Length: 100
Ligand SMILES: [Zn+2]
Image (tube, helix red, strand yellow):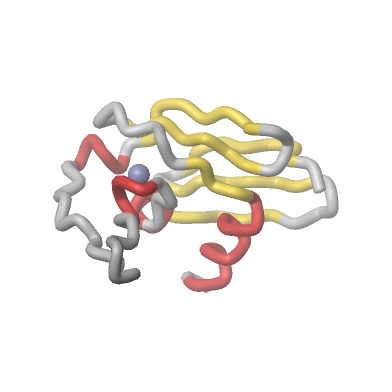
């Protein structure tokens, strides 16, 4: 599956894939689902995941850049400078299913 097109339309990330799938994901949903260790928290020695209570400011929901990574994921850069989240296409698909 190849990503053919990715752009931001009316506050949503619009993605079109080579197999004909199209996703529209609100940027707030995408940012809140950032898969990086900083946003999701890392399990401690007991296996508990402590999610950091970090506030995302309004700039944090502005998508300023995106880049495909290894043909299977999208790296997104946000207005607050955060860019460590690598969103696999399967994660993006799963997200699109949660908000329909
Ligand atoms: Zn993150």
